[in-house]
Image (cartoon, rainbow over the protein chains, first blue to last red):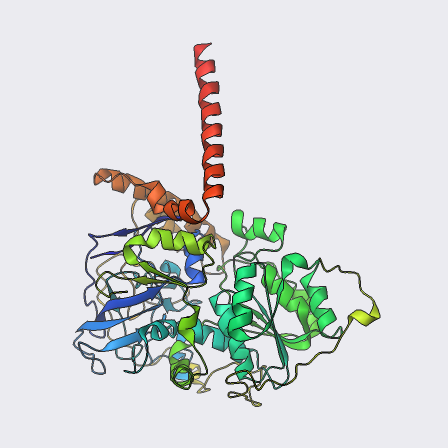
Length: 385
Length: 173
């Protein structure tokens, strides 16, 4: 079958002769992929920043598809069902799943106790092949996949597998109260969704900081927020203090993660030399921009090794930090309802529809921010554009 | 450029105003979302320890490295790219260390880079010559960022030519 084949940092190709996935466990299903996305966090893999990213792995954790085969124990899905598959692999039975922490399942990733299982996201998250392929194996198929409502556009559905719930949870973890000033660092797809979601919780002001004007223009239009390019600010922290009468923002969201720009030393340490788990510039700004007693919400992805942050200021300011991989399965019913009611319009962020065969171009375009790319979607040959 | 220098009049308390134009504003307002409490449906399941009814164990018929911080291999696991060659040896060594040790993560990054070379050798063994230009997606660089593409290519070509000339001269002497 046709599938993405990772060959090393900045090298990826679509191979036509890779083996079809098989049922390996009674609770598995095989899904024929209809849409898959390239996520901003896939770029961390593509750039070689995530340890234990093995050559020959198929990436892709945001996908929807049609069930073509089920294991002997699967009762809730049948062949022909069209499903959205949360990016987290979750058993639904462990202590953490029972607490609806589906991004933290204890039975999906033998390689790490810190990270849960994620499709196509290195062996640090379980060593699963992902959905940037014609077919994919889906474990715990009775629990994770959700049937796509008939009225839902597949382009909306694919974005509900990660981007929308992750952005929403970023705002939710911020504990936003009516009238709060919320600052979102990063205007990628997750930052865009976090900014939009902040309004749903009653934010009074939503400010987005990034360095790319085209992204800022996009989020300004899409999420009706205030936008600022940090390259035009001498110090984003001082700027936020000026905007908030010197007190700081009520909530700051780090929607950037390991590849933050804005500080040369941090970029050198975290992105080039890999001496820490990514460049922490956005998190640094978030901690220093938030008010005393404020909340910093982290959904940007970092590597597993240590990373420098101003922890002294976390203490001195009494900041609460909330962070997690989105619990997609928990949030899906609400996200579906918001799409149905017109509160959220996920597919509007898709800017590029790329045949799966041209995946290398897709990664390069997204990675190098070419052609005003916001969100690329890969279309397998049989799925039809 | 907005400077860092400040004066008292720079500081403003703008808290937003009418949001009626924003679709969905306030639909999920939750005064009970207490940020000092983790988002979870509290069940205290973990008090019982690792005692839940696990799914059937997926047959372990490939080499699966597992964290020393857990007693077993999870009920399901991925079967992509089992450890191989020199990179595999390094990975096996790395997995003897805990997730909180640099001795685990740094060797894994080293193994990834060796794996890349092993991947090229594998390709060649199978009669496939890797097309680095295509694998790096540089067709799109040519399409959307031609000026940069030309400058980079010219620079690489110039440096390579200079190196070759120097080598050629040295070998003549």
